[in-house]
Length: 144
Image (cartoon, rainbow, N blue to C red; front, side, top):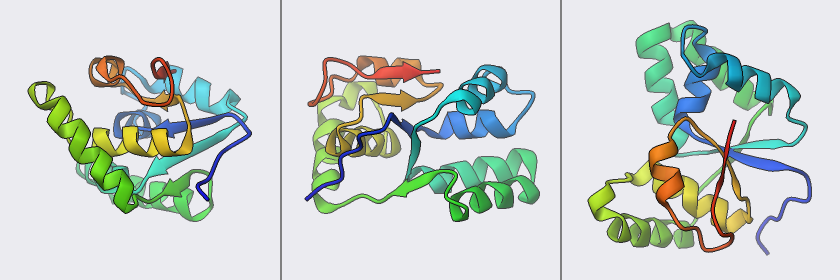
């Protein structure tokens, strides 16, 4: 049986996690304000973690990357791994939106959101996620 969350839940994209860490990022304030007041569960797909670590280490240093990893260890963010059905769904999405070039990480966020029946995505990427038609709801609610 797949997980289904009764509490408010949002799936996090790479850009939003980076924005939380970088006080100079144009999304930082609204993202930090949102996360501080959000009472639900924040899910990070495992596919997002390498992208976040690369960006944090490259632009903000290893101390910031380690801080992110500690937030995962301390369960401030919940990690969700892909399963075989998610990978198949990623292929469907990559083919369907080939001209749009959504990429594997965005496809994985969509697949996990669909499987978990989560319609909220915490993202700075309005272009890709607003164009995708999810299977489980009319459209994603893009936060913040």
